[in-house]
Image (cartoon, rainbow, N blue to C red; front, side, top):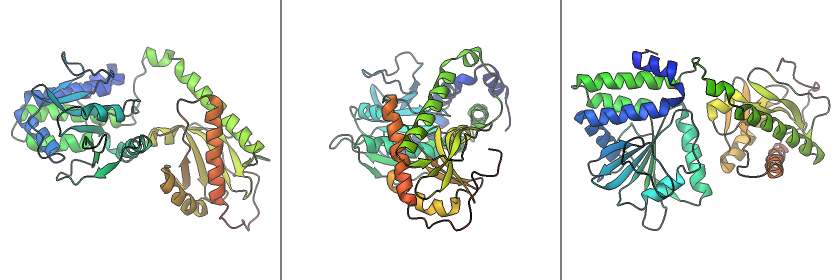
Length: 375
């Protein structure tokens, strides 16, 4: 990663403001460079060919759109007084409760075509698109895949918010967006330099390098309270699952390391072992939930478990992955519910998984009490 003085200052002093700074920088480039502005319109017209010429303003700009639902898109594209585009810029922050549903409903009030463009790191494209799709499905909003003429758009769909009202939802990455604009400003040295500065900022935001800590982060008591609450949810879920004979923990102990907190358990009927708990690396990588099941090779029969659970997960919209010789399954947390409902929903999900794994043949080799490792 090539660092610039701009990215250095932001990283050093304003690391919690990456999204706001990147949005303001992008808006400045579009405002100050006609070629960059034309490039942005070319990208949007790959999604909606008949969209008119737009001017872009950010949520920080005086007079920018703030709706009756208190929706404040990062950046809006206007044709005169008409809004046609919301741009929502993300690095690692999650979606708010309003996104994308309220944003799309607000766009449905404007003259079409309208677009909600979400910009994320390259590494987050698949995860973000899955989360957006899940939220549409939960709201009963149907969508139709769109063909785009630009490789700079990762995915785009036409959403059916109301009959004959079809805002477009599109996803791209910072790398794709800035690379596309860079081609358009090849003959504009000033804009080219500004884009390099913004790209360096995005690279810094997307990297795993150490970020300076702020006093607000260090003194924030909500995060430890949240982690302790998650620990309680894991413990209570395991206890209830044992009571319901979904899980068996006989001979198994809690096991944690620097990147995860949890314990080993077995599916009651088949005896298939796994680790269950808060997995910080998977949480950061996939972003959907802090709670994960981890099946390792050998003791957990990961290679046998994988095809069965992948078929089930595809139908249920559950995230799975195979990495570092482990097969992992996301365990969603019921949002906006009391503790009892959260715990019961987790146990229900564990029971679903147990039912799927009933298809496994009995294990022939003798099994140790728990994995022979340090985790």
